[in-house]
Structure formats: structure tokens, C-alpha cells
Image 1 (spheres, rainbow, N blue to C red):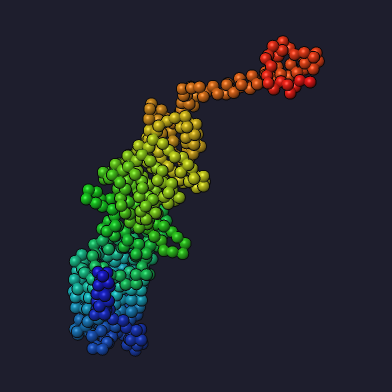
Image 2: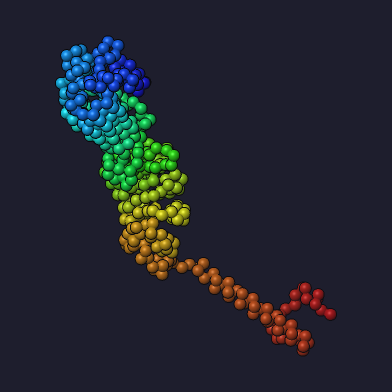
Length: 468
């Protein structure tokens, strides 16, 4: 509702105060060119100056048009080839609006004074405007600087409210300048928002490429600290642009870094700003990473720094979108007792370059499985784990990669350890028994009598079956 109210108010301001526009057909004719300016408008209170090649002819034209001697509310200057425009002239102090357009003017010098309500400097070749050019204009409510080549915006009076600005079409304008202006102006309205962009490379030094960023994205950055950056009773995080996200066919977007390090947090922040891709929660008392699963605002996280906390498990990462988008994970010096390598293996096996996990300083419960499986996994993936040699065993602080299987894989024997010997003995006895029966049968067939052990055995009830 508040946004709608501001938008309606801005429209009303534009309707009540606007710089005049004069078509080129109103310019002085060939016969009148001895005076480059003429009076016009419904009440003859407008001075129209066209095709001005020099400061001298502009001064002469203003004089012959009676700019200083007659009542004038508006001045319209069209197609001037001056190198600069002097804003400090006395002639401008009593005007309501001033338009200088379709010219080759490269700079605005001096400071405007007086009662100007609207200034239109669009469609020129402006490169430079002195910072304090407009600060003395208390009644100024509209300023059009569109379609120029300016890189930095001039200052505006800090107490201005409901001020309308058009900076569209300035493709060399630095985002830093736009960001600063939005920060000091609480009620700043923009015309032609959809065609308003700024450059990142000269304004935010951590970007590696030059990209055009929309006004909407710059306003988003302003809202980070004021509205959306995580904060609570005992903590306040810091939010800043991280880099520019370039998506083919779409305007460049800022991604966000959230720094909540050293805030005595016991859990992850409940909500993050849109398009947050890096979260730093190092040096806190966090025990769980569960919000990575349940909170939607964590869905774009690609880098998580959580060193020096009390995290005792990373199994929750298995069900999070973070593990699929992982670029960097650092959980050094926490309370991990085991490392579920199957979770991270799914990521590393994709052979995506530039993925890193830091686990050093954690003290694990080392056993035979640690020596046989985890050790080999760390060595195989050391390109992804820069501190692979800093993961320790809790008992003696030995490095996991130095574990000796022959020493670790030792356990107390019981009777089950001899099961193979028992089975072997039983098989041997069975073979001996079969051999003895076979021998007795052979003796009986060849000599007709049984060997002594067999002949001494008592008769069994079933022996009659074999008697002839």
C-alpha cells in the first residue's frame, strides 16, 4: 500500500510539474537566425533557442529574446554544439523549467540557483556533471539525465522528498553511484525503470567482468541491510553483493553473500535474502545444519563456511539441495566424529571442477573402517579436500591418513575365530572315516572276512539285510 501511494504521488507530481517540450518546427527560421532565440508558448513566457554553435551566440540570443528583461518561466535549448553548459548564469534563477536537449554538450559547470522545479538535460553527450550542480535547488522535483554518457551521478539535496529522476540510457553509469544516491534519498522515484541499467565493473571491484545490472537489482542491494539481512535480539549479520550472475537471455543479477560470523549463534539464521549463494557462520556455537533442508531461502546456497562451531553431523546434507549445488563447504574444527563419505562421493563422482570441502581439525572416532575406507577415500579425493591431512583421530590425535591397518585392525579373539579350524578338522575326520569304510569293504571282497576292528563290532538289528 505504501509503494502504491508513492507511485500515485509521483504521477501527480509529473502532471503538475513538467519540463516543456517544444518541437523543432518552433525554432527560429532562417530569416531569424541573426537571433538564435525567440519567445513563444501560450503566454509568450517561453524562450526557444536552437542551433547554438558558440557561447557568444547563446548569450546574444538570450539578450535579443529579452530573457532578462521580460517575464520568462521556461527555456528550451535545442541542437546546441557547445562543449559545456554554464549552470551558474543569473538568467536561470527565475525559471520554473529548463530544457537542454539533442545537443553535443559534454559537461555541466557551476551550480544552479533559484526556483527551478524541472530540469531536462536528456539526449546530450554529457560525460561530467559537477557534484554540487543541483544541491541549491530546493524546489527541484524533476531531473532528466537520460540518454547521456555520464559515469557518476551528481549530488541531490538530502531533504528532498518525492523527487523524480530519469537516468535511463546511460550505459556507462556506475552502479556504485546509483547505489549511493538511493541510499541518501528516501523518496526517490525513477522514470523509465525498465531501461535503467548501470555498470558493475567500475563500481564493485570484486567483479571480474563488465556487466549491465538493472535498477531493480541495485535497489535490492539497498534493501539487504535495511530489510532482509538476518538480525535478531543479540546478533546482526552483514549482507553484501557477492558477484554478478549472468544468465543468457536475462538481465544480470547480483548474488548475495551473508556474513553471520562471530555472532554467538546457536543455530543457522531462520531466513536469508533472495539469491543468497554464500553463507558464512564461522566462529559460532551452531550444532545443526537442518535449515539447509527445510528453509526455502537456503535453496540457492552454493558455499557454506561453518568453521569453529559445534556441528556433530553432516548427514542432513544428503537431503538438501545444497549438496547438489555445492561449490565450497568448510566445516573445519567442529565436533564431527565420523564422515559419511557416501554423501560427498555422489558430488565428487560427477567430476565437476572447482568443488572443495574442508574438514580439517575434526577429531574422529577412528577404527578399522577408518583405516581401511576413510583413509583411502581421503587420499583419492585430496584434490577436492585441501586439508585432507589435517583430519585427526580423537584418541591419540594421529592423522587419519597415517593410520596403519595392522595396528588399528586388531581385536580380541573368541571361539568364533577358530571356526575355520574346527570345520577343517571335521572334514578331515569325515575323509578318514570314508577311507576306513572303503578299505574294510575292499578287504571283505577280496579275502572274505572283515578286518579285526569291524569283526569285533556288535551286531546291529539291521545287519540281517546284508546276510546271504
